Length: 376
Image (tube, rainbow, N blue to C red; front, side):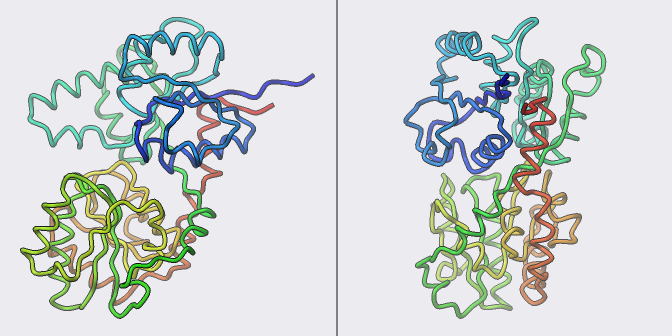
């Protein structure tokens, strides 16, 4: 007698490139390797990220932006497919599940939270932050499980839900699971060549940062710190990523007199040759959940400096044992840490060993255990 594989439905993906992303693709592949069936509930079957998804994954079109249609399609999907668990990645899809998964017989419902929510809300006006947090509290209390991608994210959820959680319900359980890193694939991709002249004909130390050009990532801080660093070390800075702050950052480079030493190379489908060839990787964020690029830099043995932002960096860098941590918004401290790490870099083998915690197999196993998905 054969037994059907346990099934996980996943929902909450953006429609454009990167909307599924490396983290979820890696998790999906890890679950498939454990004989767990996966269905993706996505905005469109023409999603640009699907080329990296295994053909064994079920695809179902549900655009959460269209509330009425999404509710109808979700109910139809659940009736026809009966997943044991459903994992939501965005608050918009969390809300869809809250409205439609009511009563006995619903699948186990998990919300994956990838950012330090109270810290993110702190950057709104006090009134806006209050109402957003109030709404999110009600939303999160309807999940069976909340999964934070760092201890800081999970601890922030514990504080945010506080007495509401213990007073009115036994749900949700809050747990921490690292974002999975496909270390073998990253290492292979890092071996590909790059045509960037600073890397093909390297004469100065190269610093690399990877991330969207948005306020959260605080690249302006990185530029100011780099300008201070160049007074002592003739270095170069490459920033991989695109976003609405690009023109402002380009102007700031001109203003600081470092435009000839900074290259905003835009979005890179494969940023790993840049990270692997760099002498230093820097994260300058105001806040995070768990910085994937920082984990990937450790995997490639590249020395790291990061702001000690809430959350993730302190966990990833093992309280500063695997890289330097500096205060948020302190260009002098960041410049000093960058100089120190360039002059006395951490041993690459030690960094790679420290990154083993993030391997994809361990993360997939943890997800399967938390979601109660056990292959026959």
